[in-house]
Image 1 (spheres, rainbow, N blue to C red):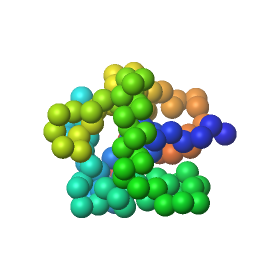
Image 2: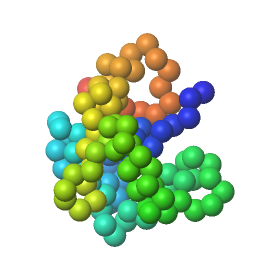
Image 3: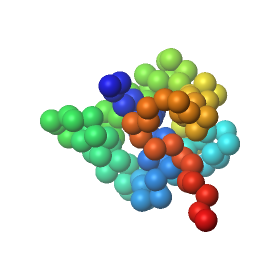
Image 4: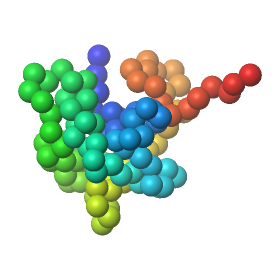
Length: 115
């Protein structure tokens, strides 16, 4: 089983209404999102637990990983405070059509139609 990557976790969190106090979309169509200042540490801590880290993950450590994504172009920093953008390629990978026929380890951002 492939390890969950940070950008996948962030996207999953953005799609989870319960995480809105930690992370929010700024412009979903462009893949721009922002951490909520007062709860960014909580999101980082949850990411560390999800990864199975023994030590507590901090926002500072998580931000370092985000900067590394900047080098690969997967996520870039936007000039606004605590604001980042997924690359086009990452957004396509995270779109529901990408998951068709694949085993899903986390739920993509689509709710089935309520009948």
